[in-house]
Structures are given as C-alpha cells and as structure tokens.
Image (cartoon, rainbow, N blue to C red):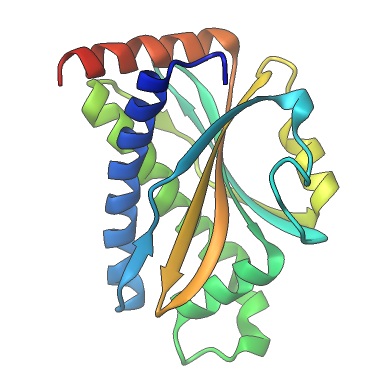
Length: 203
C-alpha cells in the first residue's frame, strides 16, 4: 500500500473504527441484541486489481449497498456481503416474526437500512473527526453474480482507487464477514489523506 504511510493507515483505521462502534450501537437498537463490528482491516488497491479472489469472496452471488458521498472529497461507498450472509443478517434484523423462507421479500429494504446505518456512521465519523461536511445520496441495493457486481463497482474510470475495509459483524453470536468499499479518484484520496494528516498532528 505505497499510497499511504503506516501512520496514515493507523489514522484511517482509527477513524473508521470509531464509525464502526457507532454503527454497532445503532444496529443493536434495531435488533434488540448486542451487535459487534470488528476493528476494520484496511487495504488500498487499484480498481484494476479487484476480483473475487483479491477480496477473498468465495460465493457465487453478492449483495451490494451503495451510496454516493460528496464534499471536500467524493467517494462511492459500498457495503458488500455474500448473498447467504445478507439473508441471515436480514433475518436477524427482522426478528422471529419473519420466517427464513420469507426473508427475501424484505431483503432490499432491510439491506438498504443496514447499509445506510453502517456507511453513514463511518462517513459521519470521518466528517466529525476531520471537521468536514459530507452529503450522501439515498442507498441502493443490488444483488447478482459476484463477478458481475464487482465489474459494476469498478466500471467508473474516474475512480481508479479502491479503499477496502474488512469487517466482522456479529449479531446474537452469529458471525458474518463483509467488506466496506470506497471508490476514490486520485485527487479525492489525496484530499482525504491531507485531512488525515491534520487529524494525526492534532492528536
């Protein structure tokens, strides 16, 4: 990850970790049970390097919640889960009143809500800690074969960099692994890093 120094990686990880904590607290209120989100493991790629093997995705189908954020820097933010994990999470969010067989009917609405909570918590954390103002679009949810979803994600030539955060989500002792993905232009990454440097110098 030659784009970022070790100190910058640590700073970004800390900012996102605070956001993950806020997201976990919000999700706990929805499911009425403890939700834990792990400390994110952060990696930076060129979009051309991205495929299922790179991201350690071993499922044929993938669900993706996407939001657009804009401000001093712009990014497309996405939350990725394998289809089977997405359905399990929706079932946990909906509670025992919905059978696992009926979960698919609520998948889009519930995953948009989940993505909105996690993505906004992370970006709000960035905005607050770095003293920025960021605006977001409404979330959208797509599901499809893994290769097709990934091709759609990386198709924007103006955003050649992909910041990937590996997270572990635990609801009622059920563990799911997901990815937070931020597509950035080179200039947006440079602006984000400059703000991270100011954050680090102020600690």
